[in-house]
Structure formats: C-alpha cells, structure tokens
Image 1: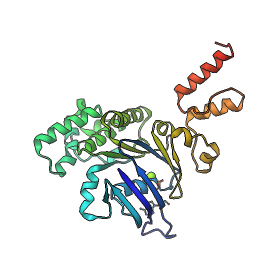
Image 2: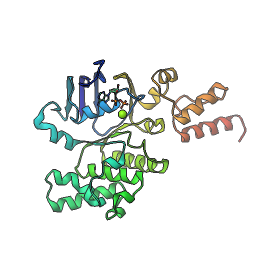
Image 3: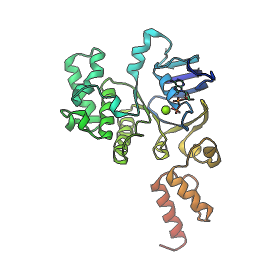
Length: 281
Ligand code: ADP
Ligand code: MG
C-alpha cells in the first residue's frame, strides 16, 4: 500500500544538515498492523509524515498505491487514502459538536450531504462514540476525543491510518479504549494501521514491528523476533514489553520458560505450566 525506496529527509533549518530519515527502504502492506518503535528523535514522526505527503522526500521516492507523493496533483488523493491521528487530542478537534467534527473531513472532500450523514453515523459507531454524537468535544475524556478524531478519518474512507503516539497523552483507561478501537478497525474493517508508540505492550499486538534508530531502520520483523534480542533493544533505547521482562528475569533465576513470551496471558500460561511440571499446583 505504501512503498518507500531509499528515502531520506533533511529538515531545511537543520544546522548539522543531517537527515532525520536516512536511506529508508520499506513498505506498509495492505491490511497489516505495523508498529513503529524508536527512542525520541529517531525519526518516527518524520517517517510518518512522509507516508501521506505532509513531507516530500529530499531523496528517494514514496509511493502510495502507486502514486508518487512528490506529484502535487495526487496529494489530496493520497491524503484521502492515508490519514493521520496525532498525539494531542485537543489539537485535532475543529467543531463544537462531535458529529459536526466527524463530518468535517468528508465535507471538505465534497461528499454529498446525505452520504455524509450515513458516513458520520457509521464512523461514530465504529469507534464506539455514537451515543456522544450531540456532545461538545471539550466535555469528553482524552480517549474519547482521540476516538472522535479517528472517526473523522474513517468518515473519509481512508484505507490506512497512521497513529503518531496517539495514546501518549491520555490516561491508561483511555489508552485501552483507543487500542481496542485500533485493533477492531484493523481486524474487522481491514483498515491498514501504522502505530507509532513507545508502549511496548501496544507494539506486541502488531503483525510486524520496525525499530528506528538515527533515522534508519535498525530492525524489522515479527514482534517475537524483534523483542527476542534484549541487547539490541537496550542499544536502541527500548525496553522489553513488561511481560517479556518478567519472563526474562524469571529465566535468569532458573525458571524454565519458553522464549516467545510477550503478553501477560502467555506469561501466566507458561508460569502455570512450569508450576504444574514442578508439581506445585
Ligand atoms: P521522533 O518522532 O522519533 O521523536 P522526529 O521525526 O520528530 O523523531 O525527529 C527526528 C529528527 O529530526 C530529530 O533530530 C529532530 O530534532 C529533527 N526534527 C524534527 N522536526 C524538525 C523540524 N520541524 N525542524 C528541524 N528538525 C526537526
Ligand atoms: Mg515523534
């Protein structure tokens, strides 16, 4: 769906003139859930903005469904295909009533009013916010505001949504709501998801993970592969997912646990199996 070929991007005002994204070749596959990890300043947001023509590569090429993001005539079609949800929910809401906010995108695309109505209802239902359609956005929690922002993008019928640390500023309850919504959009509606996050427990739910370091891709693979290399994670400023860390500590103390533990559920299962084997339970 999105293809990057030897893409570099250098900010014009950068004094060292060093690229924020450097010679990246990768793709985002239709229907997948891709997580992007990396410490602060590693180039994740720059990469995300290259995906939908907010930034145009200084070198190399980005293709969205075969359309070059450098082609000015295609910018709106590209943005209609790839939407972005940013970090701060308060900066993304433009209207004073939830349903008007969700209608804003399709209105700008020139969608006929009757169809807008249907799309708004459908999008609000998809994120579980239909009951709040007449509410004022400022009365909503952070998680609810992010879900309204997501509905605004779904209403434009985007094929792919890029979340740039969209759960970073909201409380744990809101974060879970947004994550559940993201998973549902991906699995039930087939929307391609790119999730930039610094929460490892979110990344383990992805089909594929890429790790950015100094503007380059330092690793790419299934979560169980990327999270298997503890020394690498430490070098790139990342942590193990909490359940994997617990399993690793137990392993070092001699508890016999399998290698690919990433979630609390698989950790509990493995511990139970070990305890049963030892005749403790
Ligand atoms: P991340 O999202 O992983 O924290 P960014 O893509 O925001 O990383 O930043 C990558 C690099 O680009 C950093 O060195 C950052 O300082 C620089 N950078 C980001 N935005 C700008 C900008 N608007 N102007 C100049 N440099 C920038
Ligand atoms: Mg960022």
